[in-house]
Amino acid sequence: MMRCLRLFLLDQGDVSIAYLHRKASGTASVNGTEMPVFVFRSGESFPDRSEGLIMVLSAQPPLKENHFITAKGGEPLLWLERSGDGIIGCVHNPGFISVSQSVALWKPIKAAVLTVSDKGSQGRREDRSGPALQRLLPDLGCQLQDYAVVPDEKDAICAKIRQWTLEGCHLVVLTGGTGIAPRDVTPEALLSLSDRVVPGIGEAMRLRTASSKATAILSRGLAVAYNQTLLLALPGSERGVTECFQAVAPSLRHAVEILCGWSGDCGGGHSQH
Image (cartoon, rainbow, N blue to C red; front, side, top):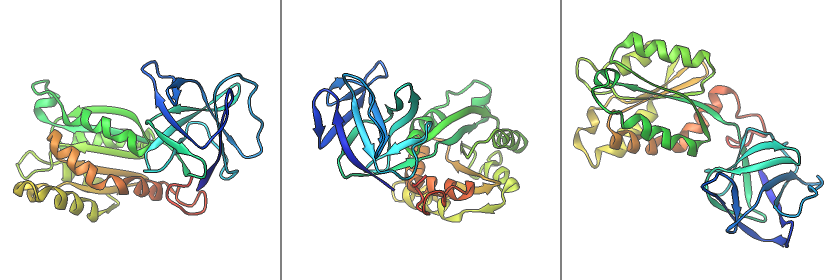
């Protein structure tokens, strides 16, 4: 875990807190003014520029481009890229950063979304649950690698998952095919690939949704580990996929980090990379 040691506006001096926002153009805004955000470790020299926010973090662990900086609340605040002046922070989510605040460095999770639907794969139904998942994944520090729609067929589901895992995906989230109808085969597909089942994830999803919908207990949503990839099967409705994902989201990054062997990179904390 790192700590924000200093916030310095190049045209004003030290400040104790700053609000970061991303303008429609994609550029960073600090306290309402468009300017770049530079991230340095303690002891490094500042760039020779007339404007910008300098964020100085404690020296360990080393800063890495193509990683996220997360602040209070656990959502990614900045995406780190390298520029001629050093590491620059691109605002990912709006939020406050303050002096002495603890922050963490997150590796990006490579994720893919698979909608399982006969009608969707034939173009006879608009997919709403898949796009809903794509909107939710970035708060885990995910980068969407791919999205696809396949029919309710075990072989088609397994083939797409195998392709994505070979391409390096850390998390594959599926929506649809988790009921008890004869064509609902998503759980069977995942179990045929599974190295181990993670039962608590399915239990947590049913517990969250059963209080508002009695038939939620019929859902067979589940999570399994396949090599170093977490496979997560959710219901097929937009509401169901959103509620179930939100029920288990706080644990998903930690699960991926354990499977990928990231959890020991920087002292054993699950968000310290």
